[in-house]
Image 1: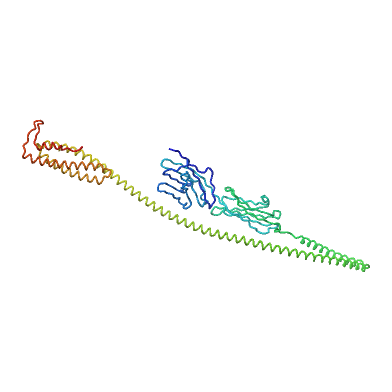
Image 2 (image 1 turned 120 degrees about the vertical axis):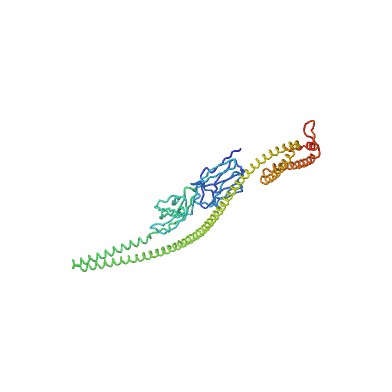
Length: 504
């Protein structure tokens, strides 16, 4: 007999939640075995049936809890492919799967490990000004196993500023990650957020471009304003000090009052002229600053409107995604209810099938009991047939002796013939019963019936001959045969010539 081997995947298979995966199982050399059974099970604390196939009755059934989620490639059985396709992966599907193939003369098994991962899209939100920078948030929900996150700037280099990242896990064992960072004007340009896990190599990322003009700035006119304001305060202080000094001098030197007043008037006029110049310069700077502020406000308003429109678009997208998620949740709940209904129906059908199986088992036990009784009856009838055959042989011998000794024991023969006739009727009755009860002994019973028919004919002939002999015994004298020294008469000679014997 040709030897076969069965091989699964030498490396763990990785699937994504919601997608399909094929668990390989290959028969070598490629062939389609006769009367083949294929059984896929998940190894846990107990074996859980995932899918079962059998050539007997063309069974191709998924396991409990896997309805509409499993499929075998029946058209590829001829090439030895007994792989299993598992649809709509769930996190609970992760584990080790056992592939078992057998036929009446051979069986083999193989195992394949399945790991399940989940990925999700990545989004970047602009949180607005944070001090001298722009606050950004990166979020992504629906990962498994636990994901990693990093921020990158120009040329794909990691950002060096402070980053705060939080990872949480929901009731479905899926992870969500949120990370916050404040980007300064030095790091303007393309900012990216990358999320990945250890099972799946492809990364998920999102990027945003930050131009330098969106960062908050300090206007140079504002610095000039504060400088001029400080100069005005200094000039005012100087004026106050000079006035105070002039008054002191006037009180101390009355004789130089006129000269001091002239000096004070001159200084006053000079200071007033300087103050007037400063005021004019301040007015010019103020108007320029107000104009600059107006332009900045208009620019900020325009950018604010742009950001608000972008934010509105993002919010609309978020609302769309939320509505889609709600629709998906609704469909999932409907599917769960449908699956639950199908599971209950399957359990009900399984219960009915089990009851039918138990009923059939009890019927089979009753049939086995009846078959045992029939076998015992057959054995009993066989013993009776054997006994009857032996009795028939003995009776035939007796009949032959009685025919030869008819003249000597005529009365005894008459009684014996009556007894034999009764036994013959009894044998016919028993033979009829045996024909009805024993089908397996039909050939033998047919032969016995034939033999019994022959016996009846010979019995009838013997009875006729005996009646004729009885009639002759009262009319024909009996003489001794000189050769055999036995009674001789025409009737006896007719009986001898008829060779009244039975078949063995």
